[in-house]
Every structure is written in C-alpha cells, then in structure tokens.
Length: 94
Image 1: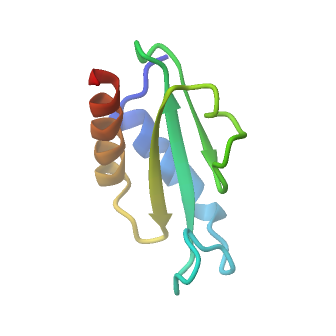
Image 2 (image 1 turned 180 degrees about the vertical axis):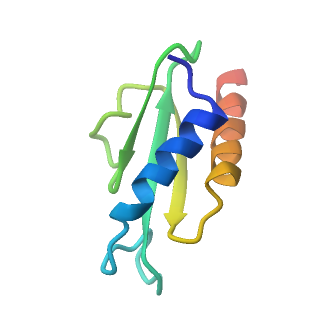
C-alpha cells in the first residue's frame, strides 16, 4: 500500500490523542508534541511509521527514505502530510 497524503493525514489525526502533557517533540520545547517518522521504499509500494526516537530501530529503519514530522495537538495534519510526501518524493528522486 502506497503512502498518500490522505493516509498520512489520517494517521497523524489518530496519533494526536496520544500526545500527553509530558510528551515533547524535541528537547526544550514548551508544548506537548511527538516526533513521527514516515518511511518508504524506492517504489513507494510499502511504508511504515514510528513515533518517538528514530535512532536506528523501529518500523521505519529498514526503509531507505524517511520523513520526520513534529506533531503537536494543534498541528494541521493535512499540511504535515503534504510536507512529508513532498520530502519522500524528493528523497526517492535522488
């Protein structure tokens, strides 16, 4: 199944309720958030995501192309999904 803006936006909307008060997308941030990594292969036939630490383990590690998203409670999920797909497309084209 290919990653699409719609699928990624739906995923991000589903993850928002899991942003607890103590969660931070990056160190020193003052508002709750989380890091979400989207990974895909060269032909976009498969994709996966992981939240939190993306340092060399998790569902995305075996994919060659990654987009890292900072998700907050007030984030525009569709906009973030468009950004992620754009980044993935750029990485695949290289």
